[in-house]
Length: 493
Image (tube, rainbow, N blue to C red; front, side, top):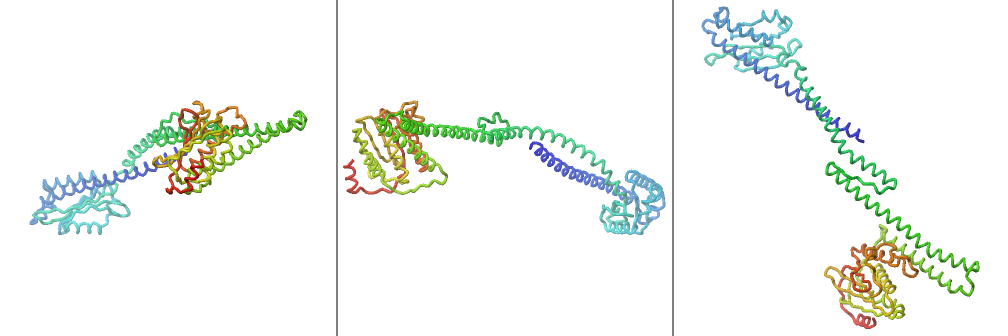
């Protein structure tokens, strides 16, 4: 992966560098051509200036044929231009009289002189005689060339034209001389950028490689791996932190899964072992017939315990399914609490327990799934009955907490030890670590918590001086006026 990324990055750098290099060569070459044309045009103006100030309209023959000091200087200037540019120079007046350096140019480059197109020169001459300056690129004899023309003027009258004709190479120069420094700069840029990109990409890729290796380890079941000490871009650090958070959550999930399987195995094994042992003892005569009723009762207790465990596991499994739904509607939670007390009246009377219904809101209308909430109420009431001794007290409270209704189930039983309080909602946790028969499966409070989470509400263990107190919240429902039936139920409780 690192190699592929490096190849892509370097390819992009090469393409960009080549593109900018070509643009640089074109720009430098255009600048060079422009500068040389300007210089050649300046030389043509110098020649035109000399020609204009040494021209006599009354005695043109003196300009063309009589050698003066000015004429000598003009010839020197023309020779100098030829030496600098290898150019063919021609001065033409309106009478088409010509002075040029044909002899000198013809000696050094007869092919170029022979290839001059008189029609092109004539067209250029006519344009310059109209007072304009030209600087054009043409093809003479199949070879590129430049023609520069300027008029020479005296007393605001165009007297003639100066034409300088040279090969394109003299203006455009040697392409290699232009491209060589650009290529050198491009190569240095490629080398430096390649080195910098290599170390930068490797620095970025190191945590990604660590993430890949950690992901492979997690795939093989090792959830202890972490990506530490990431010194890279903020996005990579965030990715590493997200990965570590995911690893922590997966590790917790895996530990919970293992604990769940171990607890389920233990909870199932205990009653099954007891049932199997008792039945086998009665079959082989180890348990005498007169004791069979006693042990059959124990088998029945363990069977009911096993049935309750399976029911709780199925209930918890259904609640944790993604497609678990709620049947939300308004109902009176006080009425539900009364029904729960009535159904447990036999157990309450056997323990001679006192029931205190402190319904500060009655009726107390809530909006929830009544079947699910009834599971919560039954679990909390059953827990209070299990852990409250004879002559104990059970207290049920409903009150308006502002944005929701709060329902509290409290008792004055054995209570919960401080070290056990953080674990009361964990699956299979029971206050009696030996899981004494009849004390429950340790799933009731987990089921209560899951049901309330599905409602977007919460359940918590309250601090209390005696016994245990659990409070849960529910959304408010539509208020309902009290009826005579409500008063009768209150008197009944």
